[in-house]
Amino acid sequence: MLRSNGWNFRARTLRKMILPIADKIFGDEKAIALFEMHEQSPGSKGFHRYQIIHVPRNGVICEWRKDMGLADNYKGISQLRIPSLMEHTVDELKAMANELRTHKFDIKGFLELDKYKPG
Image (cartoon, rainbow, N blue to C red; front, side, top):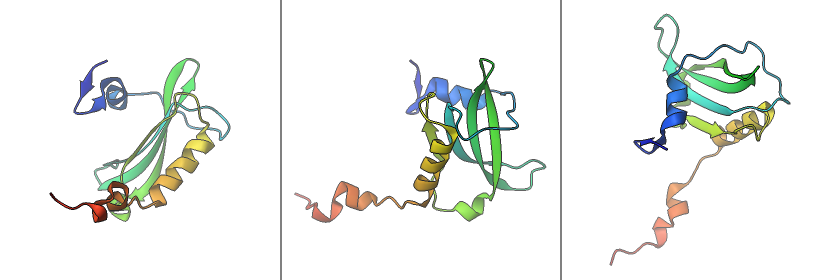
């Protein structure tokens, strides 16, 4: 599998493809992935955060999008990429995204930097 800058090349390529639109999604249907990304809004009116969910439709990957508002409202909140590979439903992915978006990750605590003493 090709890798580019630490990213899985196939997943990165998928985000660059033009995908058919899914105008409706259902909470109990299986999904392929969820992304929350900052992208240019239509009409070049600034960057917005979009929740993007990929779902299968008749054997084709389709994309559903929700405009979450101005990207400036999400400063300090990481963009999300949650793979599901048909293991999770749309509702489960949305719940994971809500948790990840609101949870502050303490990197210093995780790495236990307060206990580190340079030698």
